[in-house]
Image 1 (tube, rainbow, N blue to C red):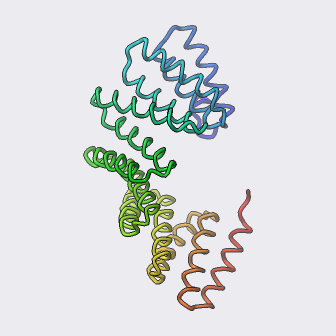
Image 2 (cartoon, helix red, strand yellow):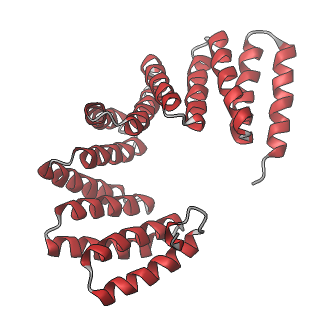
Image 3 (cartoon, one colour):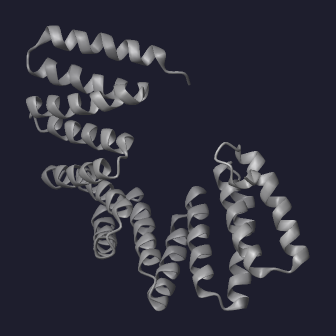
Length: 270
């Protein structure tokens, strides 16, 4: 397996391998390979926290795509530029890139690329506190994901919708979408995601004073987290169980879960 494709390779190793492949692509004059490697090298730089170098790769890829009239590659590089600009806090320019990518995706009839651009615009709007606009973007993305039966995207969008409804304090809608995301995660056997969504449902119930319901969600989440040996998730869930049992006036259980949360915290290696 090439070093750049290895799941165990470090970002530095991937950057080195992709840089070598990029040199070979330039020498061979292979534009298709060049576009592919520029995207991968830029993403490796992003993963390594070097956004300026990532932008350099994405800018070159975008220029080459435009010169070749490769609209799909152009839309993809616009999206990648948007991610990089988001990383450096330039939200206005990032949104512009994602909107351009969206227009090209619609022009090409590429619904999943269109879906992804809606998701990215929504994330930026949400981070700027424009949750109503974010929900509108996510609703469009959800329609596409449902039409194309893309469960991975449906799960992601449902989770993001729930987060935004939570920020709006529309807790019933937040629970609805967290539950949907959790059900899809279970179907996909993504147990870590399922655990996270169960925990978030528990958090909403806790805020709303439905303490017994919160306990039920937390216990289901804790079972998964324990099976996965995820100490971070366990610590958060145990904290929720402590608070729920304290509100239920069950001091014995509250103290037990508090002690377990402290123990879980001590096992975490930072």
